[in-house]
Length: 133
Image (tube, rainbow, N blue to C red; front, top):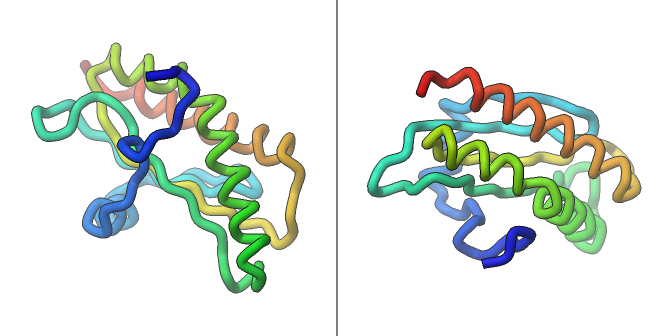
């Protein structure tokens, strides 16, 4: 599998997992992206790696075209920057779920979303490093 892919197996789709993520997970905000993450040790049921999901608010963006564009930007920014994160998770024997929420009120450029995603992923890497091995 390619290093820069974002396949169906890497997407967070389970309602049960999403609910657990928002009830037990920790948050971090780097405008315009808010990240919720939940980390846990690797088990047989959950191999090392990260499941990710994205969302854009219907309240701020009435048109589905705009919401879809935002979600596409978020997925692309994550896809391009996830490789070091996954490598660290493999080394630390950690698995997790992460969800990215767009909190801005207007459409931003890909570069701005990419920079915000980089800050979120750096924070996530710090959290992974804090977990005892």
